[in-house]
Length: 393
Ligand code: NAP
Image 1 (cartoon, rainbow, N blue to C red):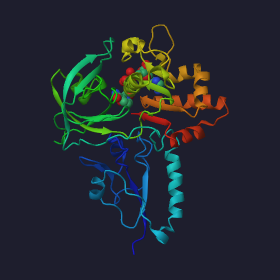
Image 2 (spheres, rainbow, N blue to C red):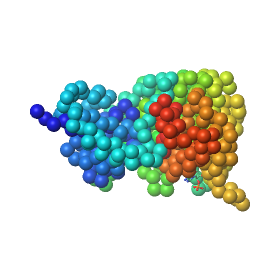
Image 3 (cartoon, rainbow, N blue to C red):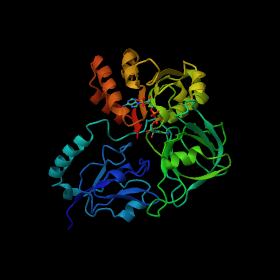
Image 4 (tube, rainbow, N blue to C red):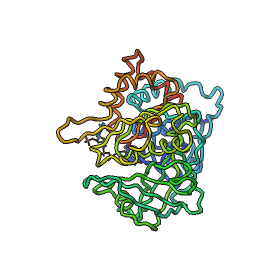
C-alpha cells in the first residue's frame, strides 16, 4: 500500500492567474497551461516561498493523498477535489503537519492568508475564456484620466459584443499582449481589475472598463494605452472569487487604495450608486496618489455624494507639503476607522501597490490596539468571515 503524502495544490476557483507563484518558485515546481496554474508534486519541496506572494491565498491548499494528483489531472480541474477519506492511513501525518504548520505560520507572518468571499457576495463566473480560447473584445473608448504629463492613466472601455462575459465588481481579466516572448512563446496574459459594475460600464450594455497606467517599458500597458477605438484584443478570465462586493446593502466598506488600485473601488461605488444609493451602510475610502493631476477619476469622484462614499484623497507629492500616504491619513482619522473596526458589518478592501501593505497593516494595528483589539486576531476573524480582502501587486 502507498504511504500517504501531503500534496501542495492551487485552488483554481480562487487563483487569478497572475503567475507570481510560478515566477517566485526557486525550483520551477509551479507551471501552467491554458487553464490552470498547478504544482508538480514530484518537484515541490514545501519551501513555502510561493505562499506570501500569492495575492489571493489560492496557493494555500493541501491534501493528504495516497497517490499525488498528476499535472494532467490538475490542469483539468475547475474546482479542487475534496480531501479523500483515507481512514487510518492518515495517522502518521501529524509530525509532518507540525513541521509544515510552523513553516506556514512563518509564511503567513505578514498580511497573507487564505482569502474568503463575503458571505452575501454573488457567485462569480471564472475562467470562461482561456489562452487557447480567449474572448475577443473591441475597444469602444480609450480616455486619458490624468493631467500629469508624467502619469498617463487610461480608462479603456471594451465592448464584448454578443459574447457572454459575466463579471462581478472586484474581478479581474487577463489581457493577452500580441506577439511572442524571447522564447518564441505567446506572452502571458497581464491581469487588470475591472473598474465597471456587473451590468456594464453603461447600464445594460455588454461592456467593461479597465484602468490602466502606462509604464515606461510596460509591454501590455503600452499596448493597451495605445489602442484605438475599434481595435480588437484577446481577454482571458474573468478571474477572482473572493475580492467581491457584499450583496448586502447594510455592509459598511472601508476602501484603501493607491493609484490604479482604485479600479475595483470604482466598480463597487458604481454598483452601490446604481442599486442602493445613499441608503447603504456607507463607504469610507482612503485613496492615495501623487497629486490631484495623477489621481484617476478625480473629476467624477467629486460628484459622488458623501452619504454614499466618504473620500479621503491623500497626496504624496504636493509642492511645499510633506509626503502623505493612505496609512498616515488613516491614523489622522483614527476614530472613524476604529469605529468601523468595532462593527461586524464592516468589510475592508486594500488594493494597489504591494509596498502599501506594511504601512496599512501598521496603521490598522495601532488603531485596533487603541480600542483594545489585537489586530492580528481581529484581522484573521475578519478574513475568515469574508470581511478582509487584499489585492496588491
Ligand atoms: P502610483 O501612482 O505609483 O502610486 C500611488 C500612490 O501610492 C503615490 O502617492 C505613491 O507615493 C504612493 N505610495 C508609494 N509607496 C507607498 C507605500 N509604501 N505606502 C503607501 N503609499 C505608497 O501607483 P500606480 O502606479 O497606479 O500603482 C498602483 C498599483 O496597483 C500597481 O502596482 C498595480 O499593479 C496595482 N494594481 C492595479 C490594479 C488595476 O486594476 N489597475 C489592480 C490591483 C492592483 P510616491 O509619491 O512615494 O510614489
